[in-house]
Image 1 (cartoon, helix red, strand yellow):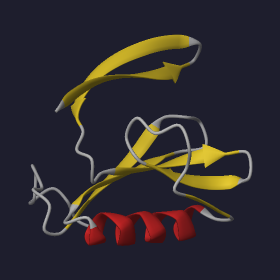
Image 2 (tube, one colour; image 1 turned 120 degrees about the vertical axis):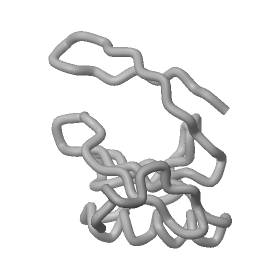
Image 3 (cartoon, rainbow, N blue to C red; image 1 turned 180 degrees about the vertical axis):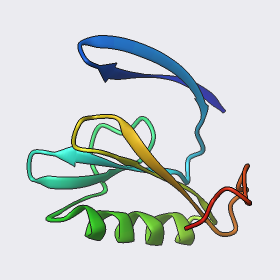
Image 4 (cartoon, helix red, strand yellow; image 1 turned 180 degrees about the horizontal axis):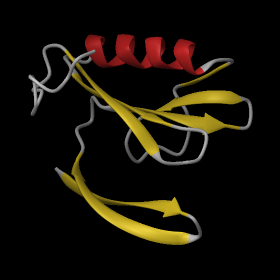
Length: 98
């Protein structure tokens, strides 16, 4: 499924196209810490004190769902990292060094 998402970049909205699956999860900044959210979800799957704990929980959720992507948002609001969880389909396996 191709979704069109928008991100705030210095007061300007930028539209991007990206492929999103139901098993993907986003780690986003949240007033209570860091939240793990499913694509298109209003509520968070969980809220954690640190970004590392939220990433670990997101990886576990994606792994249980059969693989996919964990996308991490930085404190400035831009998505800064993406990690493929097996058995997901990594589009650039040689470049993914994590």
